[in-house]
Image: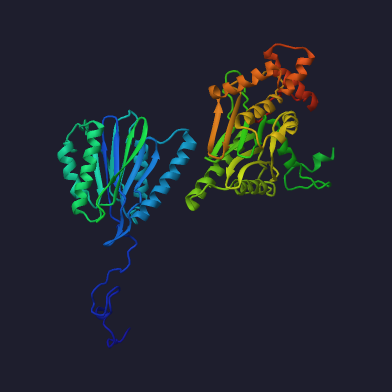
Amino acid sequence: MAAATAGYKLAAAPKAGADSQGVKQHATWSPYDDNGGTCLAVAGADYCIVAATTRMSTGYSILTRRSTKILQLTDKCVIASAGCQVDMKALQKLLQSRNVMFQHNHGKPMSCKGAAQLLSNTLYYKRFFPYYTFNLCAGLDEEGKGAVYTYDAIGSYERTGYSCQGSGKDLMQPVLDNQLKAASPLLVPARNSTTTLPLEQAIDLVKDAFVSAGERDIYTGDYVEVLIITKDGIRREELQLKLD
Amino acid sequence: MFRNQYDTDVTTWSPQGRLFQVEYAMEAVKQGSCAVGLVSNTHVVLATLKRAQNDLSSYQRKMFKIDDHMGIAIAGLTADGRVLCKYMRNECINHRFVYEAPMPVGRLVRQVADKHQVCTQRSWKRPFGVGLLVGGYDRSGPHLYNTCPSGNYYEYKAMAIGARSQAAKTYLEKHYESFPTASVEAMVQHGLRALAATLSEGELTKANCAVSIVGRNAPYVVIEDDDVEPYLQMLKAEEDAGDAPMAADEAAAGGEAAAAAEGGAAAGGDAAAGGDAAGEAAAPMETE
């Protein structure tokens, strides 16, 4: 039997993780860093446009004006990721390796739908230490129509007609909603949300969207890589934005 | 003979210092149909003879892409070959992931040879029954290697493995000095002619042969079926014109029609090999 005069009170013991004032401290180091940037994809009847800014930032500084956020997986499918670029690099390398293995085993490249599912599974694999990336998987589906799949950081995804991700998404998304007039995703049966715009008009819209977002979002700027995916292959254009 | 006392398992030496099980495994390689490889200063060409079990079945594939800069041709137990192919592909993918560069060919071949060796020194394993011709291009240029069940590997300027490969080797020995500066087309012709030398009957058709090329600025590509037809036509045209050294013998002997020229080339080559009596006898296991 312990003596009643124990020299301590349990309730008065210092709390773990608390400073001398008893206030709980949060970790001062984070494994994540948001490198900013915005990406966007628009699906058309027989094309798909994927665009992303090339600025990489940290805090209020610019790390580089020219870095790509887009991985070209196959002739018909690309993945664009905004957020933490080092996680993006690791994720893209992994998907690339999986794609090479797929081609060895099946003798043909992955379909856009297959790559979309693979990306979702890969993200969820790290559910409890996520890739800090906000992804878009886009390209042509097996019927040759444009396809865009949009994700959150842990792999929840859906197919849409267009989407944007990254620091400028809240500035860009309403512009696209207004111009591309998508039906609500809650409607049943699902409405086709690929745009009927011809390719050149869609490219102009994409460029305008980036210029607009670049005005107010400090992380959107420098250059925009625009990839246009059609049955003839992938064409690349570059748009210059303001460098401020 | 004394052989039978010491050949029960791979971990028993014979009094002469031989491992018979390993040597028997190398026999399995000789049962497979021929595979030929040759190197120039810039490219490696592999050519294989595909065999079909019977008229109803397809021809067995013997060439596999390992990576954009490397491919293999196998002779022997196809199943063993596939296992090694999977291992090599995996190693190349991992190497690219870690180092962001293609795997050096010699390094991978050494790893494969080490894998072979393990199976020659464990009582609960058996040696791989397959020989590989590994053709690849890396920073040190084009390379051709041959691995065998014993765990040995050698680099070659040109090599043939499989059934009646001596005929192909004879052809390659005659012409190898011209390989370093040969064009890719010439290399493919040499490969096909070497292959034709190993035929005991029939001739090269687009269904039973395949060619692959890898080299500087030339990612690995397999040429088979309809794509290999132009090369076979070129071969036939040369035979008709009597340019090919093999056909020259046959033309002197009887001046047969073009169709027989291919078979004639094979007969001319086979004379050197001494007429393999085993012929088309099917091996109990599926060796291709």
